[in-house]
Length: 303
Image 1 (cartoon, one colour):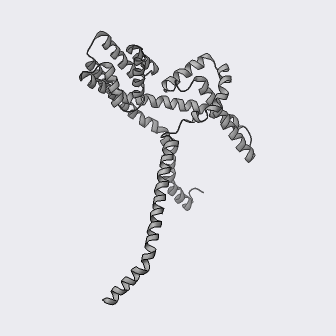
Image 2: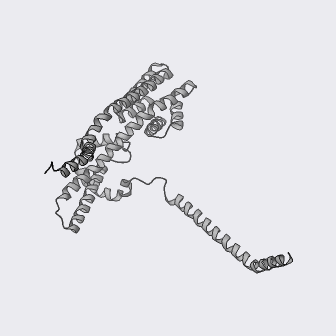
Image 3: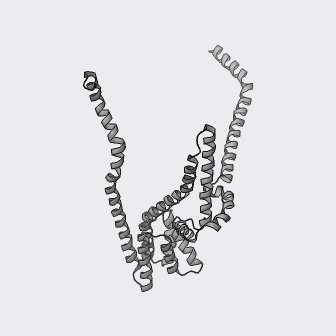
């Protein structure tokens, strides 16, 4: 027992001079790692935004080079139509029709030059360049169309919820402006919340509330939104019960959403018919007929 204790004391005496430096080194290393991670996170919070800016903002200085020539050549009818579509997408304050067409020109030139350079490297003909230019000019328009469709779907989805929040606020004794403010504060994030927030800003700036609401309905040709705004304006003008009117509008909008979902579900088999005929049925027939064909070849019936 005494020998074991003596050996343990000897081991501790040998390791003791190295324990303090090793512990200090490990602590210093962990501290450096923590400081580096904290500095990296702080730098990321300061320099990197939560959401990256859109690509048209990152190449804005290049788009501005084409804006003046495009503005001189852009027809008035095209400008008006583009302005309406940008308004539907919620981009009328960020993009002008001239700037949007300039982005189309830049995209077409970039894709065309990239295609031409790739064809020169492989020694192929230059005829696909024109197709690349047309595709590049079409891509921003397709992206704008998708943005409009997504915004419409979000408006239709969030409108009944916003109407319910306004009804609850009105039933609690709040005025219409206060009810809209509470709906903006408590409602789900999305285009509907942005539009109501814009209405409130216009009202605070001195615009009549009915005009601000009608302007919101004019920006989006969605029938449900137009009907809800029309009913709200008429109820406020004639002194009707807002809670009953808005409750009926919310129920009607939900019913319309349900009917739209049924219509889309009924269209699904028709839309699946082409992929089934073109892709799935031929492969299925090949898999089923391959053993039969091999058996017929083995027996000599197919020559």
